[in-house]
Length: 310
Image (cartoon, rainbow, N blue to C red; front, side, top):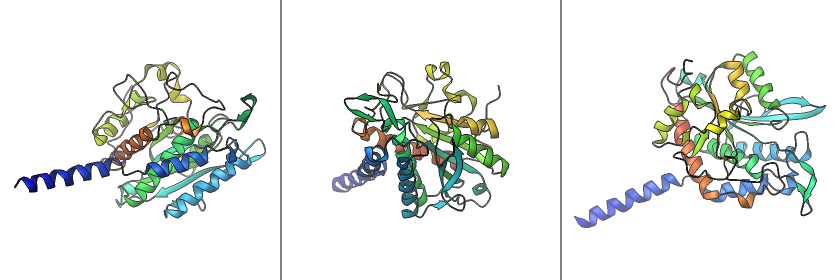
């Protein structure tokens, strides 16, 4: 009898461990070190470097049979006479009715390119924490949900020209509004490479009081993943990332998740923002937490996720 109990305990522990590590740290590291490499020259909008990043994202989606949302993966627009592209893939939902509602999971994949202020002869601002880590999260989540589709359809969106004033997300929000897409909610990811300290949650959620998104997300994740950071309110971060244009156009729950708290990482828009400084174990666990929360949002009842009344 004891042998059976020990065997059951071992199997349960192994299953739990497997669930909590379903995202490959090796894959996270591989994607991160490429996207934040000197080869991509800081991923400035309209540059050769961001073109390489776009091709890398397209290749990833194709490899995992994740379809483009439009005719191709590229949603094109112009910035200062240069071509720019949002990259958008879709995982179709399983519910006949709810699959027409779109849950967007996104992050900007551009950065600021090359700076004139060299640091130890390095002038390439690779943007590991801003925002290659979040691009990797979107890639991993897309791969996961392609194998485990929820009831609603999921859009996996990588925005360009965020650093120039949210231009990519503004373009896409207006386009989707004009095309009358049924956008349910937006989960935008920013700067998640370094864990927060001395807080009771894992990441802060901008505009958290505007909707019940975080409440339903945390219930699905079975822990307090998303929380409130007063400084985010004071700095009006809700209006300063790619969630905001979709809130403006659609009036839906549209938020940004972030772990950069202005004290835990010193290399913002700096040549030292490099991949080797990112906490891969933290990223792996957080992406897993995100997968549970997003699943809860995408499988929620009709009209369950909603804006709060003022």
